Image 1 (cartoon, rainbow, N blue to C red):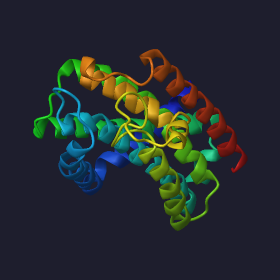
Image 2 (image 1 turned 135 degrees about the horizontal axis):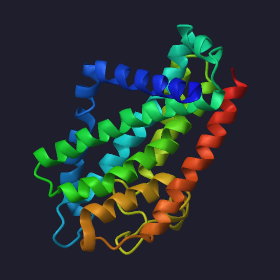
Image 3 (image 1 turned 180 degrees about the vertical axis):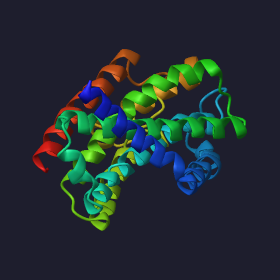
Length: 256
């Protein structure tokens, strides 16, 4: 019971801290809005899918982007906790390092999923064709995606001592994952026209590629010829989650 109570307390702390930061929640709408409106309009000249608007096509990618950027940013909480001494307090608490890592990971993942839900609502306001069934089908994919990405962010943060270095490393990791995922344009499959072979190969090793493909399959339905089988998307995302949780737990405990 002590382990469960400790895990729950850390989860609740991360969620409360996120919900109280209203400025960050509101400002997080700006970037996805710009991508959907500006890039979504421009992409019509490079991608053409029957009965699918540019905003409809790009929307799953923007959800993936939001999950990626939010999840990775959550790793900064480790640095804040270290600077303010909170990390020392939880490390000497009578709970295991695994529970500490999972508590922070689940809390940050919840925050990232909340952010993704807000982007779903933004899509409705922009007139993108979305349904309650789509939302319920996307939610598990979004949650699974955040597990691995948050664990990656926490792992990186556990080796970094200051906020400035984390910001630089975060951008170095985020941008390749985002642009090589097919979030903005197809990088594989029948819709990928004039895409270099090296880009196709690299995208196959990007876990976000499979998450975006699964989300796009749900949103576009039969209009989208999925690059990978849906079960493969799920297997890769789950495999990435397991690997990053194990690596994150080990690295987090070793840095204490």
